Length: 165
Image 1: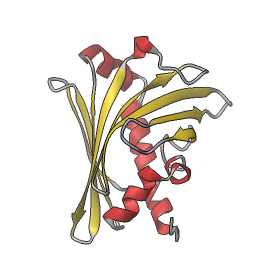
Image 2: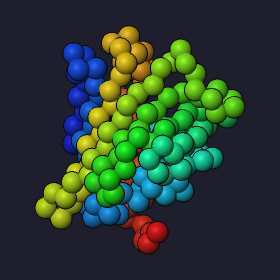
Image 3: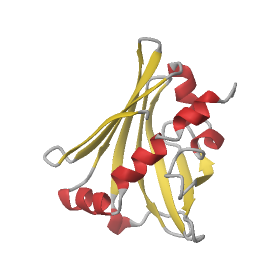
Image 4: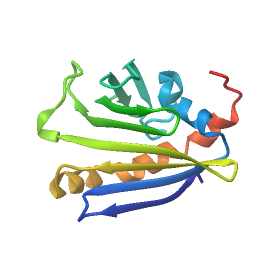
């Protein structure tokens, strides 16, 4: 399993994942940069993602939806706030309606992803910061932690493939 740890900090309003991968930092970076690779792991196996837009630049917007086992869809969005290839990515993440517009009552989550070389492997740390304790608790109840753990667990298979782009 790639996930080394996950930790919820209710005082800091964060959910942090740490995962190690047998690949270079540049290779793991491409999993975030390339929407076709991103959609193969963003979301748990039973809720695969489809990225309709992925403007991977500061200020860029991404729109995606995840499709459940019964064909139900859940849409989401990102606005990228910082890109420092290949080591740091920051974005706002939230739920979207059927038109891809943010669902304001759900708020947004600030995500910070760092990739560090660790003895020939890559350590990815992903910190999600919530707007409030209520939002953190709602996302936890919705299964965010387990869903992200499952999503990250798909990365090893993708990295094992010979993908040059």
